[in-house]
Length: 87
Length: 415
Image (cartoon, rainbow over all chains, first blue to last red; front, side, top):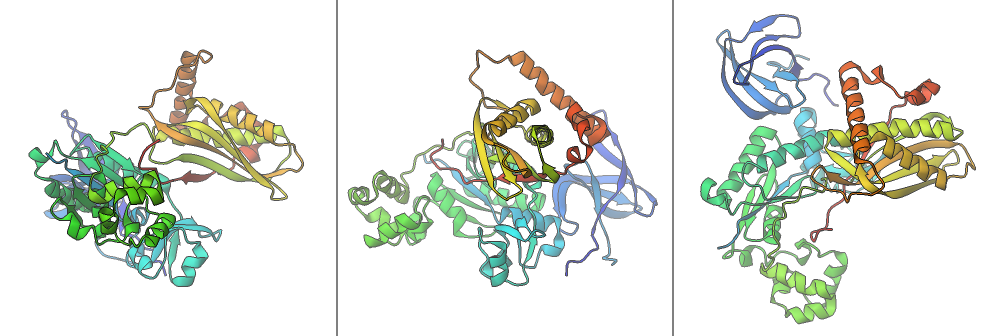
């Protein structure tokens, strides 16, 4: 009855701390090992993800011209929302 | 000028947090409670689909399944809920420093001072309601009024995810027709007494002569009359010395029965380490230590003891637990399961009465040693550093302690 696939994907993230103390993610490593460069972070705010199920700091990232949300949870883990529900 | 008081109530708090994290539970009847695998326990919180089917807080799991066969149960994860409770408080803190928590899912906010800056009470309430939905992914109902009692009635008035005002000019229309039992402190017994007087609504209480109420209900009669008329002037207490939960405990059914004091001491230390570590993680200290013991004939008891000074030190918790055990167990039979609990929790803001016979410097060192151990374990794994006593029995020292908290409703009048 309870579906086993998850729309919440924890990912490896490379990030930098700026001298002002801001944390900015630079690359995301996807489940299959592919690395994506984050071109730009356009917005940072606290937000929940109903799709993946969780809450945290939401980074709106531009990756190869496409916008993606990257979440930083309060237990120091990063997650993204899976685009399609591949079972 | 009237005060501006908000009462914010997180709707089905535990269930909402679970539904946020587990989307598959979102649109089905579900409840947080007990231990579904062990098939015992009670419903702590049910979501709205389950509530509509008649599932109520406090029902045994089997009763809930009887009224709603397809209900899904999930075990409580208190540490997660406490994190959300802290995030809620943090957000309230952006609007006012006058916050009085009522359990871990409700709080009163006195926003009189910030109303000028942030807009009126209703505007702040809507903003809180929206931000909590968007930022935390759960919903709150907020009541806005000029006293705490009406603010609370406001947050109960419309659920979930709503804002209700209970201003001076509107409370007679909105509140007075509510059943008397909606008022704080009208329980089944008071409700019965009121009905005998022909009073069924809050308005009925308000319009009765307080002397008659006092005759039948004692001092409470006058208080209820004042509540019903909006004469409640109790301040929002800036209350931060009491923890939002009442106790933290760990218990275990050991892999083999415990046969002597050495066995018991080892297990009590394992459990105390876990209790102390969780106390520290939440910034709490306990003022009472409690043990629970069950022998292999299923005879069981609990005993507790008040401490001179509040503590989060492993050794103090374990030694007190051990002393309780020695005083109360006569070894008629081997022991099957045992638990340790820290109760009467206080926060870091709480100040102890200094004692002539304790050594604050030594206690501080012990506290720091415990912190160092916790930190080593966090960095290098749980078994990277251990007490000598753990090496005497590998099987017993590797037990997996079960978490357990108690959350009691608080009293309105404080301790």
